[in-house]
Length: 358
Image (cartoon, rainbow, N blue to C red; front, side, top):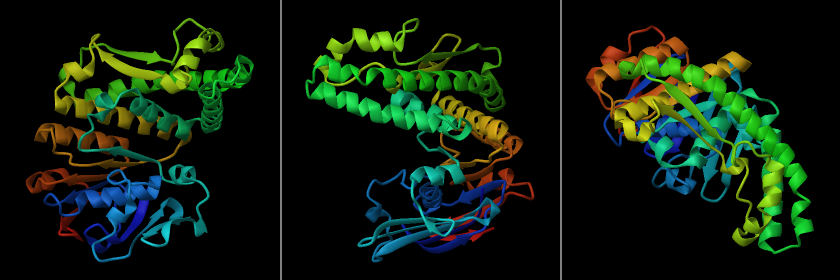
């Protein structure tokens, strides 16, 4: 949770200091005013990268040479990030240089709902693997170790395949790849079984159109069900040689939730797809709260996009029930007066890079 946020020379924001609420923080303003830049700043502090630009030079305010971000998270721990045209990226956590980006994610767990959150359906298995792996990183202590080990061994096996090494030099990696791969597949399967239970609860709160529907989890571990991963690696070595990489394994896994046997991407409207992804995120946050007693931060860009007033209020009610610190951007000034009613809710007005608490 953030207790303080400071932005300097960040996009169109020259200087701003915010003291966010532990509840809902609503950022209201016209398009291009700087609302999403606040979400981007929080995302950068939590992830060490931007969701809008690969080149951080594009984030520096015009005619300036650097940008700087600072935040205090729960228990007063300071996080600072600076990027300059000549100095590059520098990150400090608790007054010490950051060693690994994973340390940021550990201290500031973050869920981001972009304006175009339909990417859950459109970007394919790789994005959906990232979704479930985010949850596992925060609730399963051994997951990151096995994920890193598997990734390294997979890279070495693929290098042997690309360089047409003898079978013996390829198979030498199989036992370790199988060991860590089985662990990853098991973690994902068990996590998803817990996730779908909570997903159903949150989706019913957000969208009551499917209260009588049947939700079914489908998980593909990355190799044919009923077969051993070790046997698949052995049987498909000629195929992998021809491809130049290892095709089967957790790196090819996918998962989905079917609704009455149908793909939600084909069944749901754009608004319902947004509620679907929101329910997944809320389910992950609630699971993290239960399993390791850790609080997340939720970012929602352009809440009013694709959602009518009734469903926007449903989202706010769900967030209040979950009790998660949330930052929401919207252009709807009339709606903002209806949404922010509780004492721990704050509304910020954003105009041309100037942010004022209302």
